[in-house]
Structure formats: C-alpha cells, structure tokens
Length: 345
Image (cartoon, rainbow, N blue to C red; front, side, top):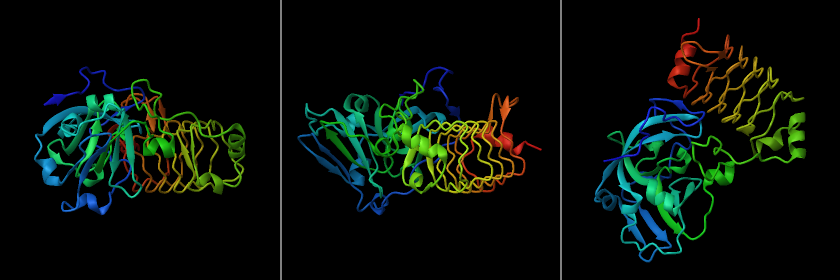
C-alpha cells in the first residue's frame, strides 16, 4: 500500500473546498470500445524499443497495489484520502525499453473528442498510477472506468479517464484541456495560480465584449480570465456564452438570458442576476457569495463546488440572495453549501 495523501490537517491547497463526495466532472461517457472487454486494448508505444498492447486480462494479471491520495479538482473541490487500486506507471513500463530521448508521457483516452493529457516523464514516473478501482469498488464509467490514470499532486485534469494509450514522446504536446480551454500545463494546486494561463482576449476584443452587442461570436469561442468587473452589456440576450475564470464581480445582469452559458470558475460575487435565465448553465467552481439571485431561474444548472456564501458554515459573512430563485434539478453543490441552502427559511 502506498500512501501519498497530505500528512497534516493543513491539506487543502489555496481556494479549494473539502468534500466527502466524489463529484463527476468533465466527460461522462467514453467510446464503445472502452466498455467492451473483447475490444478493449491498452497500447504502450512511442519512444520505446518494445511496444506492447494489453488486453483486459493482461492488465488484470499484473500485480496490483493500492494508492491513497488527495484529489484536487480545478473546479475548487478537494477529496481527502481516496484509495485507488491499480499499478504504478513504472510497472506498466517494465520491459518496454524507454528510450533516452523520451521526456514526456502522453495519455490518450477512449473518447469521442480524443481527450489526452501530457506530463513530464520524471513527474509521471514518480506520481502516476493506472487504476481500475476506487475505495474498493470498480471505477464507475463516469469516473473513468474501466481504467484511468491518477497523478498525485496535480489538478485532476492531469488524471485521464478511459485510458487507451500511453505514448512516450521526445516533445511535449499540450493536453486537450490546455489546448482548447487554456488550462495551465503545470497544474500544481499549491501555488494557487496554476488553473489557467493568462487571458485569451486582446484589449480590442475585451472592449468589444464589454460593449455587449452581438454575442454570436462569443458563443463560438472560449473567453478565459477576462476582467469584466461591473459588466453592464447593452444586450441582455447573451445565451450559451463561454466565460471561464472571468472576473464578473458586481456585473449588472438583471433579466439576462444566460441559458446554457459556461461560467466555470468565474467570480460573480456581488453580481446583479435578478430574474436572470440561467437554466442548464455550468457554474462549477463559481463564486456567488453576495450575488443577487432573487427570482433567477437556475433549473438544471451545474453547481459543483460553487460557493453561495463565504465564511464558516455556522456563521457566513457574505451570502447570496436567493429568495424566489428556481433551483430545481441543480447538481453538484458540496455539503456545506447544500446545508446552507436547505437551511434557509
């Protein structure tokens, strides 16, 4: 048994929230081959002298062990001491003859969008396992079953669901989330600033967005880390815009149509969202303390690790205003936030 969990009570990285849950984030389903034992294969290739392909029974015949680690998700939740069953990457690479040119390990998923992630070889050898069970039970499909990677000490987007390929490389390609959404390639939770790289907009583009007219353009791309404090767009039909890790403090959005919007990790503290239409919005990791959500429709919204208050659960210092808000079918609220919401008069 390998225990790599944090040894002290001071185990939460900056801006993370503790939970006993194991929230489902990211993709939910793989391609069909991942769930068919007759077709499932795991390939190890690239900068190796002896590539290998494992069927499921080959993988299960390996000598398995357990790894206990803390999970830190980029969407601001952390789960302490999860125990995974599988093999360290070093064991999987035994006998393949890793070339001296190899500097990176790229993991590729059974997914419709070909999700992948990359780690420096030294990091992967020290910290990555390939696992098939969590807390004594086979991994559920939505958590990456039948087989996934987990990497100690990195945000969980560096741990890949539905593993199908381990590729040793001489270069260092960015992973899926780093390429498409600007996630930080380092992914170290402890500095507190390795969630995203810098903002994605030029000053002229930011000015155009702040003006708030013609949102079709902004629905086709992901805007990240934009300073939209006090935003008061001219148009209120905004729709399924993607504003990730953006600063929307004190934004003036009463009655705005934000149905299907993706506001992951954005800061909405103090925002005016009265009567806003936010059905099905992705609000994972959002800060909503002090926001005015009276009469807003958040039915079906994803609220994993979103914060509706700040301060200790028994005496919050800043709270969202949720009177008359529609919250049917919202998902993902962590325990303290759920208790606060259910305990309101």
